[in-house]
Image (cartoon, rainbow, N blue to C red; front, side, top):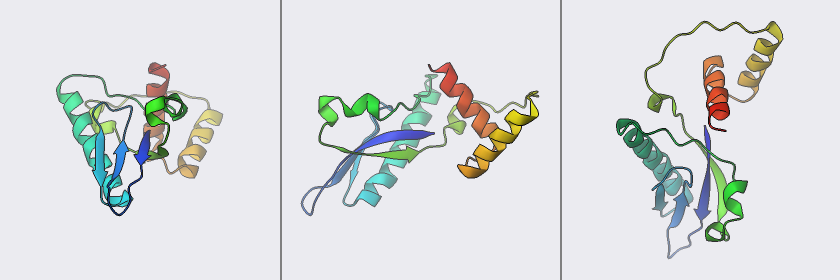
Length: 133
């Protein structure tokens, strides 16, 4: 899933900070953007794993526009962080799904064109988006 991140750019005297607003407590920094980005991935996984262990729902990503207008994010840059949340959703179960051929073709085209892991990943993410509305 693509989580929006807000970036507080550093310079030669200050670190670059990254927050993941949809994951409570996900704040990190690094001497370079690349270090901060890698740290953001790590902190996201740690916090999502902790949420799973506590039996809490995995926080789903919002649109960047939800945060950009808020005063605390006014001067920050924005980006996206791709996090595979599958390990935090519980045991994988196989289901048999019947869909019209045209829908399957469109799903498969989307999976190929957007580098989605699999048809199952696409369907799981689409279901999570619908369930979290």
